[in-house]
Length: 366
Figure 1 (cartoon, rainbow, N blue to C red):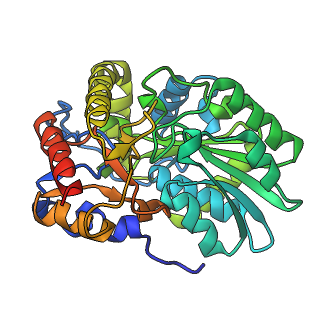
Figure 2: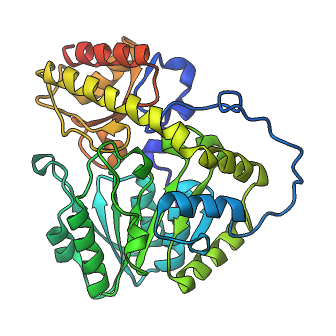
Figure 3: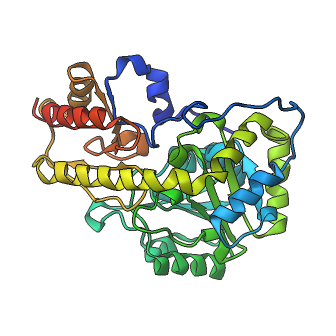
């Protein structure tokens, strides 16, 4: 494994220092919760080795909230990042080939590179509405393609497949004997209606998700892999056992309490995120220096500058932070030009979001 630190992690706000940022519009999740805000007090848990697959109660809740799968189809992992790492290292080797869409969450791109397998990127175009084109994926498949990897809802653009497009890609993977990996981390934040759980559509389809983005609890590091293929799950379990044996009983207990209140927590969150999306749409409509593709899920979008800002993009990002106190995710976090940036509208307070939008407009003008 040839590990290289990813720009999105090196330049993350937690590494940079939250105290240096006034308007943090770089985050890709809703606002962080606390034990108090969730009304939780951790009981006197026995700090034993937990069930290797994840607690039975948690797997039941994940399966019930996902639809179309059973608890035995679920493997609890250390966040979605841990799930993606397990899948890549369990299934890919130097002789294999991966087809993956780009831009993408960095782990979906960098871990396969560290493994040394062949990778073909299917680049999503702003001009096409960042649409994932099944025909473009089909054209990238090689005889040794092992995995086709997509995200839906998409990070960083917030776009989604239609159900017919998802089913077309599922059928494409089956026809070519490939595993289809669908990163569904934002599925619970599908603002205009969720698609069927991808893993419910076939044994060759693997779904990944977590509690980090939609529930504001990234600090408990709970994610999961869902697959109806028992042999695949056994291989993923073997990888997890060699990495960490099991998860944290404290983290899993908190996750159980959160998912047990899933509908109660999600309903007001979705209402608020739809309101915020409308606010971003109104701002973009009045900002003649930016274009965007309106997101359908998640809490991020990926605007594009219509022209280079005064002094160039590097000067823009420096000015935005140092003069206006605002931080966004530059395009190079996602291997795209820095004329794009990821704007997260779910994490800041409403007032901070307004301040950040004004800061961006000012910084674009020099």
